Length: 470
Image (tube, rainbow, N blue to C red; front, side):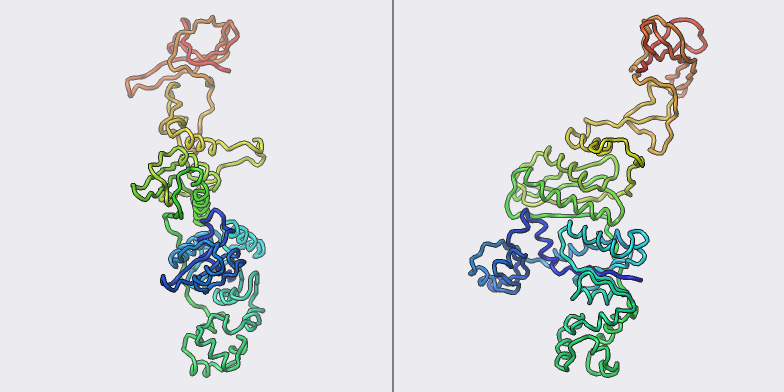
């Protein structure tokens, strides 16, 4: 087996930066009591101002300020780790969040689908960059070794033959041991993990807790159970604003981020979404809800954003917005649209399914109706907007006009000749609206081609016009 470890050293602040309109502006996470606040984490722009993690807030402000502050919430960081676990689930069904500050996944079997490890690694890094999370990515033959190697390396991939050598070069304090154990080993003159591996097992058991030897054995490949991640059946995302938002245009940035997160979540579970709710949070009035419904399951981030944008722009918001939630509970399986190998459409053409959903979002649900084929012989009841046949049903190839009249009417033009027919249609006896007709394709004296009928069995008499051919 082959394991990849995704270490997230800046997860807490990366999660906050994703919500900022300008992520390059100086930002610091603060934690601790009100009288002794310290900087928990900072972004590169804040570091350029001279700020450092662990610095007292008062000292940071004495340097001149000029940076934004957000209170650190450990639960928020864990929510982002669960989100990334759902994202990683698309690459492997064996994903675990048991190891601290990281996600491990088995990728040996995934290479049959995604290609060799360098290609899979490049794809994961590209998607993580788009999602906005800094990371270390390491591959090894067991998850525990991959986890400790990620403390020092990024991009390292080791096999069974080189694993012990790579582990042996790790500093003791970066080998996943507790700080007390690492200090004790350093006092003994042990600086590298290979020196610890060389110690007699009995000596380690006498001088250190039992879990130390257990940890060393796991690094060298001893199997240990991990809990496997299972993606939830509901997506919930939320962004809180630091000021009141009154313009729908100002809601587009958080909306784009939420729909992109939803798309990443859906890709991880290989599903789609058919309905989701946007909750606009207000301070003094009840929250507003904007429903976004689709006629079929989708998961493309650009399409989800466009549909939600159309609904937001049409919504009547009673008060300024302080936060936005996206909640999706209807997550049916996703079936990709069928495409021809050589697509004849122009490059800029919009697929019909996307155009349909955009029109519904812009004009309203009632403005766009579906047209379906019903299993019915009576021509006036074949085409309907209600309960059409399933997509897999076969529509019979019959001679039918492109323009069907709502009701048959007498054909006033003289019939020049009969081109095809008769086709007899007898149906409807069960609902007291039965018909008995012989249909013909006729050409009129003016050169038009009409679809007309006579009462069944009649060889002469006037024609009733029911449609025109182009």
